[in-house]
Image (cartoon, rainbow, N blue to C red; front, side, top):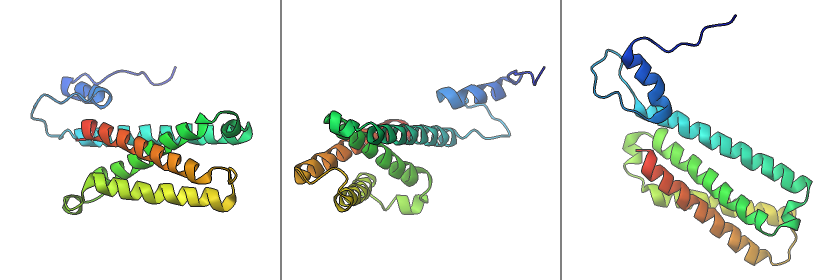
Length: 166
């Protein structure tokens, strides 16, 4: 038989259930339990980031297993865009939801995200070079394109966070 799946009868509690999914405010009702929309966005962004991380991990496995990086020149470009989106999304999520407000007020968010993303991107390129992952043919040009796509992914993540994570 199982547990019956019903919504709460009280309209304010019911609105809270749906507001997590649709970012609906609680319409200013005075309740003893306060409503926290940023917590809902925090959770949703975290779930989306983890989903993106799983997609990247799956594609990375498939690309290495079936030599997709050597078959399709653009596979590396897509992966670096998604990697930039994922890393910058994680940095922005951390800055927005984990760094204390007093410290966050002192940090320029865009510049901090940009510098941290460059550190991760350059470290990844050094890793590729040291392990000779993809050969030395046109390495500098490939590394430049990879870093550029990391930055494009960061810009998209920044615009998404600027619009939705307030």
